[in-house]
Amino acid sequence: MTTLDIVTPKRRSYGSLTLWAGLALVGIHIAIGLLTLVWTPYDPTGMSGGRLEAPSWLHWAGTDRLGRDFLTQIMIGSRIALIVGTGAVAIGVLIGVTLGILAAFASKLLDDALAATLDILIAFPTLLIAMLVVAASDTANLASAIIAIGIALSAIVARLTRILAKRVLLMDYITAARTSGSSWPAIVFGHILPNIWPTLSVNFALQFGLAVIAEASLSYLGLGAPPPNASWGRLLQEAQGTVYTAPIGAIAPGIALVSLVIGINLLADGLRDSIDPTRRAR
Picture 1 (cartoon, rainbow, N blue to C red):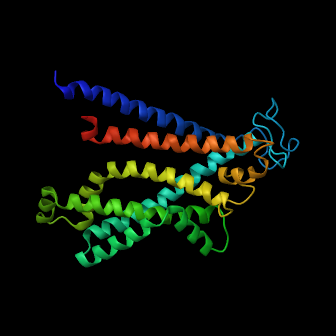
Picture 2: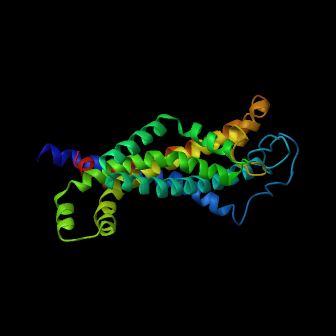
Picture 3: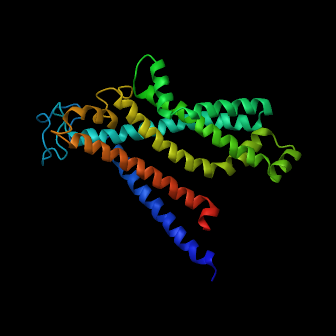
């Protein structure tokens, strides 16, 4: 029995465990987000209790400073985080993959210019770019936050797509496809995208986590989803003044945010172990 035979099952077992742990954490948030579409413990805007009540049988996570059920607010926050993450990643993928493919096929001069531009954009933090885009819009709302974060993420996706696509273009089967007279769209959709998509999908999962954190940060700064949207970032901002008298107001949304981001990162790591044959063989 070789060393490879000994290590491979353990590596696969670890990768499977990571993948399932990530799926479980993310799945919980997805289930909660979908549940809020049809049911919540209380009306999200209803003042069903006293101000800053401690957790009880009536209000499992207590109430906020306006008397609203805090568990309901946390559940709504899961839905908003998932909406923002999905929307931002969709925008980032659409823009980023398009730019990356175009850069891979562009002339050397144009490719170098696009690469330099992408490097400059990536040098700025995602949150800073999102803040600039939101500030340039007339109002701060959920839609502007999604668009801003998606644009900020697109530079990362474009750079990775460009690198992967240029590697695929050097392969012999691409030369054979060109020689046989295949059109550029046929090469892109028939050869390039299928070969780079596994690696890109892992990156998309990581970008989802970045989008969730960016939205919470924007909401914390007052640039995200406005009230009555119960974003976790806004809940953390509102809990600043009552962190000593009602600490659950800061603890609960923080745990929710961390659990979702950890779940997404575990999911991305598990996907990488499952997709990448070199990692499976370690």
